[in-house]
Length: 261
Length: 307
Image (cartoon, rainbow over all chains, first blue to last red):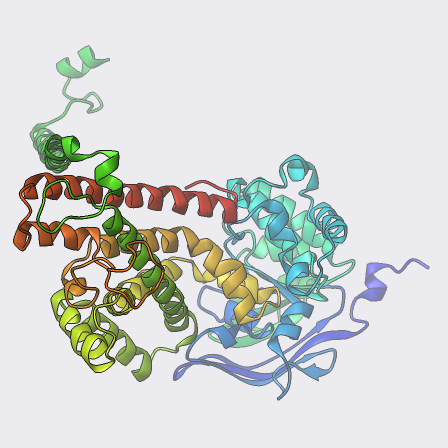
């Protein structure tokens, strides 16, 4: 039986943030954020610079553990289990939740080594298996045809757009359930951006995608749901269509109509 | 176009006015001065090397490079000294490298900014400024007298370890801190542990700089004198000049150079001094060149890219 996207949308909550507060030292960057992200959808986080959307995104992957002075309160439930609970291991969580960063950050290694980095650290040693994973991930990331003849060349020789697709392939190689993207196209030109956007559209078949974006057009093009952040608060959440055509909050309307931001 | 610009005032400005001419003049001046300074540094070094070759080349012979030193007669060689230099170098690196790398990795990757890290770093920096002669006297008191090691290769190597540990630790830290945090995040983001991140991503990215640091330190160890005079001693082993025993005295090439000129009574002091200086210089040059080559090769090996 073939499910239509509409049927799948909203069937199950993959990731739920409950009363999340995030502090950098004494500064509170996120205040009482509540958000629920359905499985197999693309969920956009929008808002003006400094509104906390990236900060919030990083909390979904326990990336703040790496930032000295950052502190997260509240609960983030992945399939109902709190990733901040005692005994929850960030290594396991980051295996299940992948992250693509704002700037392409390939390792200074070959293209092949970049893609199989994740599988290798999780214990895959079989070279044939790794080659299969490499090809599959690069195909999924729509990069295979461009790099198949030079897998042993340095990833740093790729263009910015190719590097970012490589970073996506690298995340796909560990087969996460959720992919977080922090403005993945903001450092790219329009053609590379549209390739990444097409790719995101395909990814939601198998993954739950949460994407922070600066660009409201991008949010409108690729996401089913949108949350609007302002000054560390989630002002409004809804289907992307509703947020952009009939926002309930004045601040949302002001932002999407370009009155500030 | 240029013709038009000279005739009409309202044409688009393409010819330099007084302000631009002044800036261009200063630009040219700065280029000349910096180029001249660079050239004179190279010239001085070249003159130094050529002069040493001129003085020392005639002393170099197979007999000189492999023969034993003489106390009173002419014709002494430097074979055991070359051997001892490498012996102490290897011994020192065996002590220094693991400790310095481990300490550098700990301070850069594990230690949280705070009191402890500040104290360790402050101590290391203080240790780095201790003159090598002071370190030599420390070695004399502790290893030669207190531990009753006498003059020994081991005592010399441990003293050199203390002398070079802070510098190599610092080099390691700087090499690691040059690795962008975005790579650490990428690795941790894929579910790597901290150690996996360090040995699979951070260290391979920093290996070129770390290797360069190690080889440059090796050059310093090779040429060190003051710290060794009172610890490794001024004589080569009495039993057998090429023995492996670390508890024998072990005069190195650099010390031999100092010794022949200040204490020795052999008639051919100049010949031995000039020859030793030339050999020492060539060795250190080889270290420096191989530092670059090895650094590049390792970077390429680990990153698939030259630079």
